Length: 126
Image 1 (cartoon, rainbow, N blue to C red):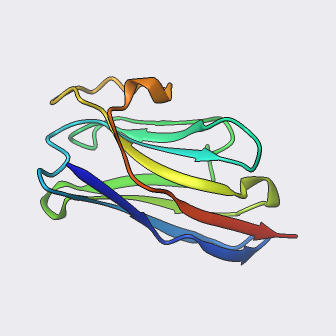
Image 2 (tube, rainbow, N blue to C red):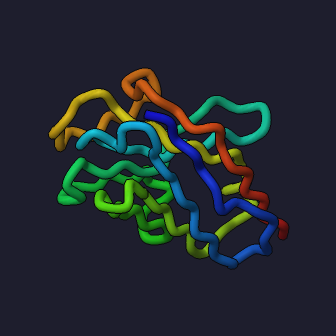
């Protein structure tokens, strides 16, 4: 499977963005999908994750109440809606898929995700 993240851009403090992650080749294969971000000069960090059936989601504390993850398995798409953006949300955002079909456990560490998209840049100006 190959992943393609899109939807990033330059926005202002308080604005919203909708990121998309498209799977091609073999779909998400009923695996967990996560979103991570990497601010300039910093390590990659977990943002949100969703189980294969959408029945379980997990958010980083920084994302709770502002970001929403969802998926459309029929369309092989996972979405991350970013609301109430702040300058500190500026980062490259990546989607990733885990290799455990049917799992509802959402790993928080990047090492547990086997497939990664190329990232989409989100820049929030103050």
